[in-house]
Length: 256
Image 1: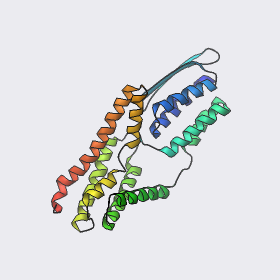
Image 2: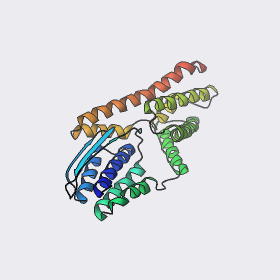
Image 3: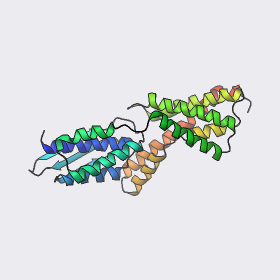
Image 4: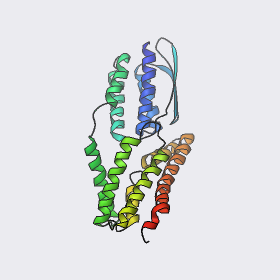
């Protein structure tokens, strides 16, 4: 491989990792053009969708390189990982390391040790506790919400693999949480079932993807914007469907 091929391959892989981690398309496009410009590439053309990337560039010797990449991994917002990738892109543009080493630098950034599982779980538990207070939940509701939070978090670790449909994942999580909440209500461990369901659903609502979708619309990426809005809406509906299904099947366990 010549230097241009290493740059092309790195730019496409970095773009994929950034999109999967929750970056908006404008940020990804800007990153690719800056990296190519820093290495003296000319006539750069980059086309991006959230499921497909294509990049064409010409190196200093006039060689034309073109590459494509299909993104099959499910989008899973990971701001910690995205921060490392943004920092890597800035360092690449500033220091211009040997193109042969670019892939190794990318792997190092992606595989860097971040917050531990326990630290992340404590963050979720703290956030859900604050929302419980905000929604006037009682101490029984709080305990149930914490139990459900742990279950959703563990499901995210073991079930949210690349290629897993997030709509199916959302239905599964809310159905399991809704069913458990109904069972705990049956034995008197829940005061307000709706407070529990609303608070726990906050863990699954696609907030950042929705913001990115509207940003795409405002910045001229209408196709991506419409697709992402539709996807976010379907995921939100899936959250409701999981709770409705649990109430339909097991709602008879309690008196409303």
